[in-house]
Length: 267
Image (cartoon, rainbow, N blue to C red):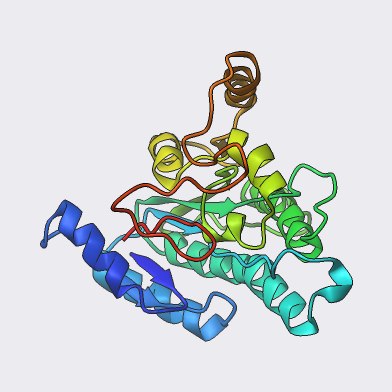
């Protein structure tokens, strides 16, 4: 069950073309910054899937890459509403849904991005600040789920289902969110060295997510060993990126569609 603020029908069609017309793949319009929209999506998900085992909070805005004082008030509000409030309300709704599923342990994954480990994110002040708060939010929820809220007997032992919450870190992915407003220098480094395609990241992360047990797990693509290997391959073995050329331009392959920011169309 996928959602977007725009109709995801074309994405659903592409997935069905790959996995078969009878595959249980559905889509819906959902504005994660709007509580009513999120609750409607959760209800649709239950109706379509029956049981929801995994909920991934992945929607994000970065507000465009520019100095903070050049970011509009409206953009700041939108980034915070999607990246922080959206994750909060989506997590709350997902937990309510999962606690009500008898005999099922559900998993909620909150996706983090730049700034999550500290350090500045120049050009993305609002985005970095919102993302930095997500691990704290997840840690707090883990403590609550472990019964550490003083003065409260929570979570109640009588709930039909159970919930675990986790942090998901895909690293740098060649999407519009990464490449929009980028410079040749950024595309050469770090993007050209550390970024990966959506398919590469998914092949690594999905099995890890499905194998996750317990709660509070940090599931990441760009691990320290992988980061060191990427540096070794680029700067010691002198291997070049097949996505970014030496001038910091996206390498466009024949027969593939790209948008104006150089992002490859996935469907």
